[in-house]
Amino acid sequence: MAYEALADWFEFLNDDCDYALWSQYFIRKLEENGAGRRGLEVGCGSGAFSRLLTRAGYKMSGADISVPMLEKAAYLAGREGLDVSFFRADAARLKAPETYDFLLSPNDCYNYIPTAGLPAAFKSAAACLRAGGLFLFDISSACKLREKVANNMFADDRDEVTYLSFNRLYGDRVETDVTLFVREKDGRFRRFDERHTQYIHEEEEVVRALEAAGFHTRVEGHLGEQKEGSDRLNFLCRKA
Image 1: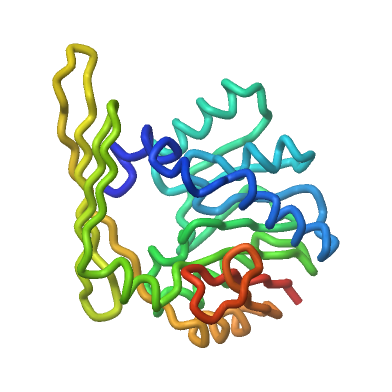
Image 2 (image 1 turned 30 degrees about the horizontal axis):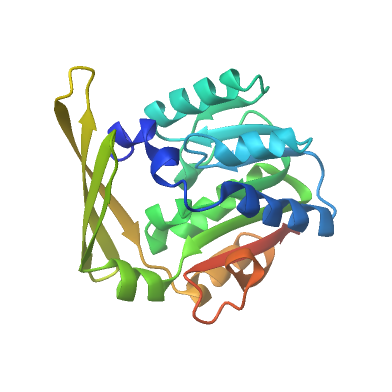
């Protein structure tokens, strides 16, 4: 399954994405739009944004479908002395133990849901929000997936781990075969293999699904840049 072996290495291998700067973008949007202080990170992975927003004074919870990711998230939050609760949930049919002032879902969570499943996913997200609550999430743009990721390979070779990904386009999705070589204590490397599927979503399709779920939506590029040509589209949504 996706994010089994990768859970231990996800943040380590993404150390170039500047989580701190990225979280400040979300905090700014929450403040500008008068969000409350209680939030849920959907598809939280190892919980980087939940930890950063908790340190900024928000009361955060995190949800993910991957048990290894949730275990890593709980470990990292505990190591930093942060009070973040994590629970298992599927973004495609999100269920939560309470309602929140805002939902946050960075880093492509909704690319893992087929386009046909987005209306139901967004309706379940709306059910987890109070009236007037905010839903902030992003997707990898269609241009990025088709022209930069698909039919390409990527590698990251570190002392502790080597990451390889091979990406192939199949119509509406990109299939990624991930291989990790992890150094063990005796110096030998152990191999792990995973497959990830990301679906290509056009902006107009996403906006229609959000509107059908009762959201008013604005779209901009990564960290607020122009959306034309951006590798990432940010959807800033308010529940009616």
